[in-house]
Structure formats: C-alpha cells, structure tokens
Image 1 (spheres, each protein chain N blue to C red):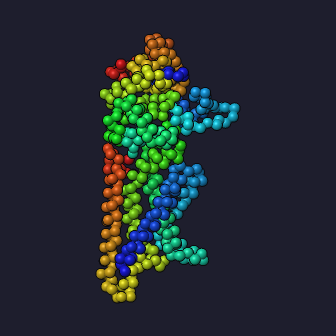
Image 2: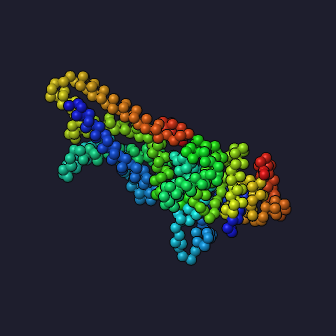
Image 3: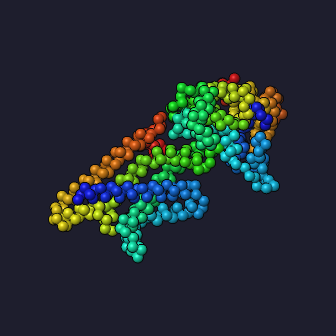
Length: 215
Length: 231
C-alpha cells in the first residue's frame, strides 16, 4: 500500500511540477518581455497563487468548483500546478534577469529576432541558473503532495491513514515510516538535480550551486 | 562612409560615441537622422512615411564588436561564430562550420574552437567576437571600444586583427582611444563632443594642428594615458 502511495506521490510531483514549468516559464517571460497587459496579468496571477495557502487553493478548486464536477485529480492539478507555476515563474524570472543585457544585445546585433535571442541565447543560460533554486521547488513539491489527500486522492499520506485507521497500524510507526519515505525522496531528488546542475555547468564558469550568488 | 574606409570616432566619455554606433544598427532607436546602408534606408527620422525595413536582416549585415565582448557564454568558440550562420543565415551545419572555421583561423584561434568563453583570455574572447562578426559577411563592422576592457598586454593582439581587417578592405567604424591605431589605419577621425561633431579630418591633419583647444587638450590627455602602447 505504501509503495503504491509513494508511486502516486511521485506521479503527482511530476504532474504538478510539469504544469508549473509549462505555465511558469511563459508567466516569467510575460513579466519580463510582455506588454503592459501581459505584465499586469502575469503579476496578478503570480501574486494570487503565491499568496494563498495550498489548502485554501485545493478547497477552492475542488469544493468551490463542485458544480462543474471536477475530479479530485483535475482540481489538485489546477491548484498545486498553478501554485507551483507562480513560484517557478519567480525562479525563472530571477534567472532570466540575471543574464547580462549584453547577451541579448549581441544576439540582436548579428540579426537574431527577439524570439531567437531569447530561445537560443538567454534561456539556455537562464535555465542553468534556475536549476539550484528549482531543486528547492522540487523538494517543496514532493512534500506538498501530501496536502492533496484532503480532496480524496489516495497518495502516500492517505495510504498511511488507511493503515492506521482500518488495520489498526501503530500510528507512530506508520507515520515515521512515511516520514522516512518523504525524506528519502527529497534527498534523492536533490542529489540527482545537483548532479544535473554540475553536468550542465559551463566549463570555466563557477559551479551550478553558486551561480545565483555569483550574480 | 565609403566601402573599405576605416573611420575612428574619438571624444570624451558620455559624449554619445557608443550611442551613435548603436543608432547605426538601431540597437538604440535614434530620435532623428538618416542611416542608409548600401542603398537600403535603415533609419529616416522624421521621415515622410514609416519605413518598411527588416531590421534583423540589416543587422545581420552590420557586424558589432562590443567593449566587453558579449560572447555567448554557454556556447563554444565554434558555436559562437557559427550560431548566426545557422539561425540567421539559415546555412546548413556543414557549410556554417566551414565558414566559421575560416573566420576563426583569421583571428588565429583554431586551437580553441572547443573552448568556452570563460576559458579564454580577454584578448582571445575579443578576437572570437570579431570572428563572430566577420562570419556574417558584413558590409560594415562597428567597433565599440574593443580594447577598453583588456589588460594592456592583450590589446596588441586585438589591434593587430583590426589592422589586418582594415588593410584587407573591410569597412570599419570604430570608437576607440587607441590613437596609434587611428593614426596608422584611419582614413578619417571624427571628434565627438557633447553629441556634436567638433572636427572631422584625416589623422595627420587632426593630430598636427587642430584649431580646437578642446581637441588638443583631449589628445594630450589620451596620449599620456595610452601613450605606452601606441604603435
């Protein structure tokens, strides 16, 4: 049961983070490069989803939209995915703005369009800078998947409750074991992302971990 | 400017030299004035009607070399020089590579093609950025204080490349304080002060007897500062 729950927790993490990237990067781009309307819309989105507790968002999307008959998974994906998008937009925004203006200028000077300059010159560098803070978001997300048990998704936390409630498992033992699983997941995830950051480090530049501080 | 000419812009800092260069390829949008490149009007303000000009295409024909190189940090030397050929000129990878290698050879860095900018000295980085500009086969290259960010002992290698280019007939508009360079290759020196052209003359004339005390004072100061490595 716990293995099944762990698998679900991981799946949810990837789904939520995926929505976060897919929505978060455009939000960051809109905040930096957008016109007035784009900047304002992106900022309002970001402020709202960063400003509300995860539980409130989950309740809003699940119980608040119950007339629309949204499934727990859809509601959770909207709530947690968009929340992550708001946080990730700030990670990517910071990273993009850390890239020297000269990089884009040089790209434009050889005749690249703005789109190509961002796509081929700015973003590849920004993603490297974003990786260390992004791994932080990854860690948070693994842990935050535990919130979604409130809308009825059977993930790790809820599996634990089933064991305690139905099979009279020892609460301390069961929850300790669950804690251990979460800890292992975040630890392993951070380790892998750290390795990825080192692999992507540009030769001659400072290592990925310190890239943000350097700028 | 005529084809094959080298002109040098000098003048005190904050006087608009870099801005003038950037107005040529509209990295800075000029308020007023006219720029025509080989028959194509790039800027015409205030013009009779709005210009229809593909600015990206124009920029691809005007090379630009920056004070702090601005090499693409995540790309190797080869890719720095090649990316414009592939992404802007839509050349095939093989041709682009050949062309890029040719330009890298011009600046003497064939042994560094797989290095990243951070692994190179400032002089080498600037030579790569010249190769990047050359690769686009520009009609004109703008140099924005190409040696100002370099350690004194690295200036020579960059100036050598620039002198070679000028002698090979490249059209060059340079902002620089390297008066030795200006004296040896410039067809004309433009002295800019507070956004206005104060004087415009061949180097020999401008250096020998300028009527402007302002220019003489500036030249004296520059010679004191940069005198050490004048060629």
